[in-house]
Image (cartoon, rainbow, N blue to C red; front, side):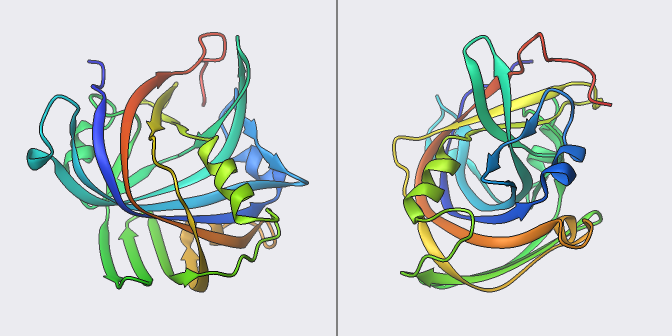
Length: 240
């Protein structure tokens, strides 16, 4: 069954970004995808977002569901008939809601697992702890007017990089091919943060020096649409 287009609001989104060793990044990707490089570094990260009013686009916002979510990801590129495309590879998504766990691989693309979330949030500071059997994430950041990054010279460059990679590829049900989920919005604005503490069992488990924390972006109150994407047929091969 094809996924319907979904409307939602990103109430809050943290984009935690790491500099990755390109060879290590490539080893984490399925065939058909390659790391998208900034200089001599690949880019990995964690998307920590609170979604609200998630529902098929023909249904009113008052009946949508809400959840905290986490997705580890690697910025990627691939080729199709139009040329080189940009997006992210997401090995697994975690959600505080059981609904995407049940619907993952059918009405919702990709694999979804349940996780517990603890969130402390003020207008200028966000602390998130997420835990599942296969994942632990901790993030503690506050809004900042200072920009510090080795990947990008300006906040605008970092924002443009993220906005260009709005298709997320995940292993399909059964793990043989890729499911795609594309985000679109007419409203895009990110802010810089000061990092107090970041931890990720996924990136911390990589070889020493393979993943170095670079920066964290924050987004708030962004209306979005999600729709399914199909991987190019010439590349839609086994990912085992």
